[in-house]
Amino acid sequence: MIELTKTGIDGLDEILNGGIVKDSTTLVSGNPGAGKSILGLQYIYNGVDMFDEKGIYLSFEENQEDLREAAESIGLDKWPEYVERGDILVYDKRELLGEHDFSSSLDMLLEDFKDSEYERLVLDSLAMFNLFFDDERERRTYLLKFSDILKENGLTTLMTNEQGAVFPKSEIGLENYLTDGNIYLLQTPTDSGVKRYVWVAKMRKQDIETDIFPMEISWGGITVHDNASEFSMMNHGDSPLE
Ligand SMILES: Nc1ncnc2c1ncn2[C@@H]1O[C@H](COP(=O)(O)OP(=O)(O)O)[C@@H](O)[C@H]1O
Ligand SMILES: [Mg+2]
Image (cartoon, rainbow, N blue to C red; front, side, top):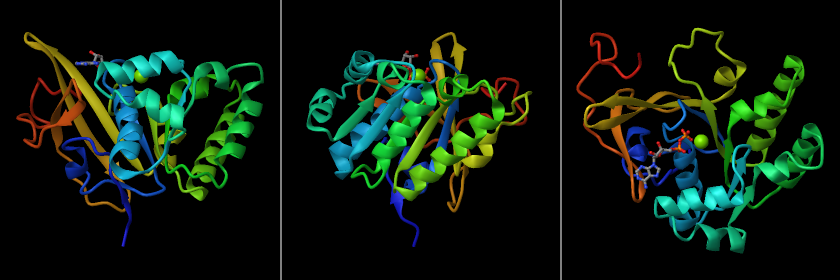
């Protein structure tokens, strides 16, 4: 039996066929504003709120206050309380990029993860994480080491990635091979506002719904609708993937 970790996000667990495989690492990709950080915040918040699972949020982009405000802006109003209680552990950019050099910050983090009581982790974002390595080999080594340690310590992880196109013109990065799953968040402007979609492209060991589903961001966060969208990826000009 494969154990699953539920996101608790309306509609998302259904298309994931129950949830994310426990101890796996899933990449959440999309353009700026697509909803990656919100998905991460909800995943961690719902863990505590609905499933009694503690979570760690690593943000290379925002500080504690930004995260709290983002959480509160979608109605995750117990965020500060959960952080206060230690049910949510936040490492913000000030801590991660603070006094120490980046690799010693990472070593410290990895030490903290060992035998931890936490079960969920979000790394927001991989793009920023990558920026701190000028050496490709060092970056790869760290990414591998990082993934291994997360897995060994029972952390089911989402890593956000600023990657717009589903089929990037550039070389497909190591992160796509390293991760067990791939979720894309897409957005397309229309006359009546932005339309948002989610596509679960890959989920190792899981039989998933691979259609593209419409989603919304509003008070309460992300909601995924189960009516697979009206266009197909291949034969319409208005595909959000283009
Ligand atoms: N309460 C809300 N109601 C509707 N949309 C919201 C709300 N809060 C944030 N958003 C939308 O969510 C988007 C930001 O999502 P975010 O997760 O920060 O994006 P990303 O991390 O992918 O760059 C913004 O485009 C914003 O319009
Ligand atoms: Mg973000």
